Figure 1 (cartoon, rainbow, N blue to C red):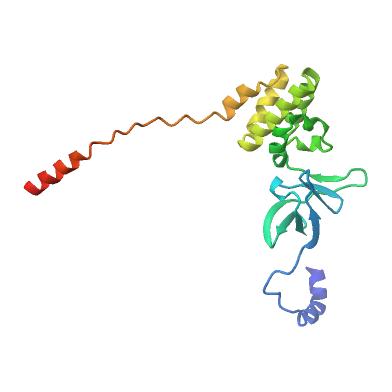
Figure 2 (figure 1 turned 90 degrees about the vertical axis):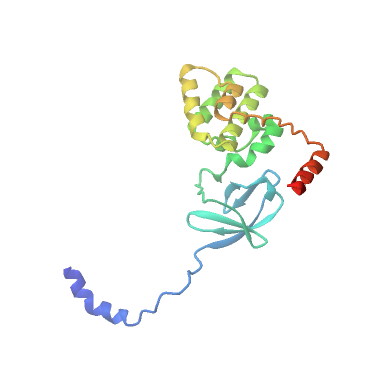
Length: 215
């Protein structure tokens, strides 16, 4: 309080020269361009990001905010993601495993050789499960099972619940049964019953009309 009183006179002088705040928000982002590669990734300021497969081959206008990236195509916002950072020892990455599920389902064995494979695990339980699968199964079976787990987590919104179940299986020393997990966390919807509609004879309508006229 004493310091405020001592500086009050100087503050009052500066206050008289202060301008009003702008009516609209000022530009608080930097803008760059980036092309999405055929792998579904793009690089901005030495950080590798993933993008939805529909954007492959397109050049994006990227607005860099302090906490996120907004990506525009032909003036429309098409993708937004949290901003990642990098260090001198490691290139930064902002990878979303859900962007790669469809392509990995077509070629599951590609999972094993991905340069950013470890960034695809959404939680620690998934990474540990992969290590167990890789040690116990053939490369083909391990990749197919892991891709199936990522599909179940991402496409059916059970990432956290599935991680808890994987933790239990890891403690028990058991491998995940992909079919059983799909039946539990993403059961198929019951088939609609077949409804058979019998069309009445058209002559019945004539009878009804005749009865209405007589009435």
